[in-house]
Length: 577
Image 1 (cartoon, rainbow, N blue to C red):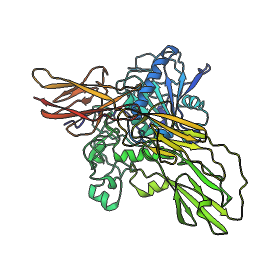
Image 2: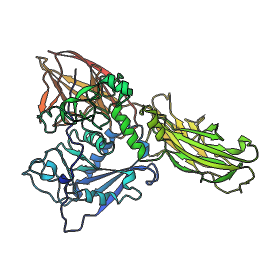
Image 3: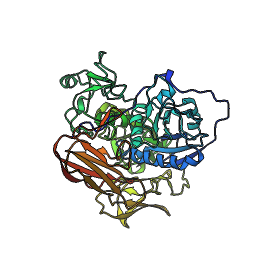
């Protein structure tokens, strides 16, 4: 079985002494902010700002391709896949004087004049780590500030270098090389550091040099421990709620030795996850942390009836975020008693007794990505109003119209959610008429798409005289596998060919003997070459790729398209002698 296909290479926390802070005498280059995905007001959304460095004006097409590839992989990984709708994404194009970045790939390589002064070797340090890709953070802040409404509290900066060399870093900002075969897997690993505060799970700092034993106290890291499984359960500590479950990254959630650059005497939750081995997803422990991190960047309630005292003929409303896979939960109470769910509460229908009443609404996320009920509850948001039955609400002339909806410029996946928000007349609740292929269906502000036959479908939403239309892509991508073995049958190559009937990147995955799904990227040194399996694996820069024991194995493979549709897994059986 594959137990260690590839190991993640970057580091989590960057000391201030290593930051690249050059002095510039000339004016910084101008930049262009390009919205890639806008789901709402930047002041209320999570804004991912992607900067490029070392891309000349002639290289800018390559920067755009690199951004698209990184995003395609990111949206295929949970929890980004389910919470993609929380993100605004902006690409900041900065034409560089020189092409490429400094000290790439060696210390003797040229120093290049680039807007963010990106450099390998920990910023061109003779005592640095070659894969550690640093930059001028102050310059990155200046360029990211060009995105209106995106501030540090609701923003994450990701910087791509114009390089095919493996590298990245994950301090306050995340960096990654743009064009390496593995580069689109570096960015979610580094976001694990920068956004989620996750630590590295590999057992070395410099490749090929074991980290030795951990000798400190119980680490503060959520996903590292000194405790046994029994102690975690007894003390209700660390990942005790997940113990024994099948890991999203393969195997089971348990206790595996090594992590935080130490090879012994410290334990992590999974045999491999993206914080240890690039290609695998986050395990449940990391996914829970990243779900929390995304949730902290944007409140569940985006807008609501202004707080205060209202009449009993008023309609109270809330506008919420809308996850891609399932709606949030909205519940109303009057004087502490349940009064309904949905995004509007028509007070007139409640026939309140004369006097004053207290109305509360609570919005929470019922996701199973967060196992701790206290943490899940901490993300819930509430609003409160006083209702006075003596008040009469004056009529208004607010016209029915849509205010925000699921973007309609790209197809929606077959298991997704289409949402729409409307204007809010004071004394009447607007009803949206939803249809799928012309057939009326009942929904509030979120239409969950389920059980659609393969093909293309049309969803419409009508309020007043306005209709919005979305295309639903219910056709999964296709993926084929090419395998080849020499006569000796002592090795195996695997090439996956994924395609879709619509534009957009398709991400292929495979797994061996039921282990975790692994992102197919070709081969680390050449993305056009197939993945190679041998009995001892292949050592590339002190990492072993494609180690597969002799014997009979089942390789499953699948793909996910840009709309989020998965192809049904197929499989091939192979034997290594």
